[in-house]
Length: 214
Image 1 (cartoon, one colour):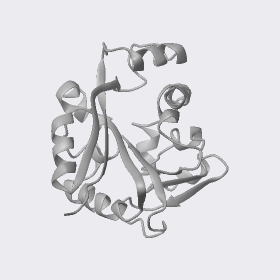
Image 2 (image 1 turned 90 degrees about the vertical axis):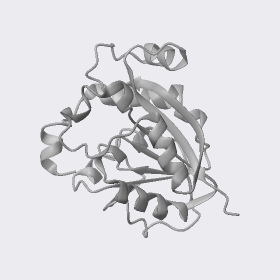
Image 3 (image 1 turned 45 degrees about the vertical axis):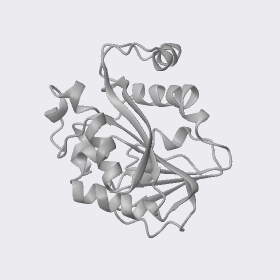
Image 4 (image 1 turned 90 degrees about the horizontal axis):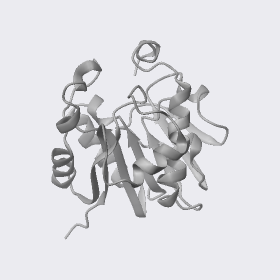
């Protein structure tokens, strides 16, 4: 993303850090082991990777300002997610992308999946968090950098078509943004994640791994 995007659409917001600390506490820490190598694709302000407790933490984004926002110990790389040559093969155990692939063309998304495949370890997975067009169609193009539309169905199908095995699909994982009317309070976020009822749930969570080739 350009610097202008972070000065307009995605300005710094203290509430975002509160949300991501709660998401780590109530959800992601149960999926990331202490000995994992974790890669944050399109990491932005580093809200996810800064909260991760793992053996190694990697972050990549095209935004030149990204390295100044990640925590000490995070290995920051400025560049496209379609080029992961700077990462050792079979080294990443948990790859994560938040609100990334709706900003890319399908060709670039596919190129990222191809690049990531060789970087994942035998236990490696990719988890994707992003708007679900089926529930967020009214607001989807309020972000002028959104170029591709996905629902939880089409995202899972896209992954499958490109040689990935979909492990988990959660159509309504979170509200769309921290600008929603729900208060940003960690215990409430924890309760929301556990609840089968998701008011204003417009972001999906999809987890996949490379399919075994026959």
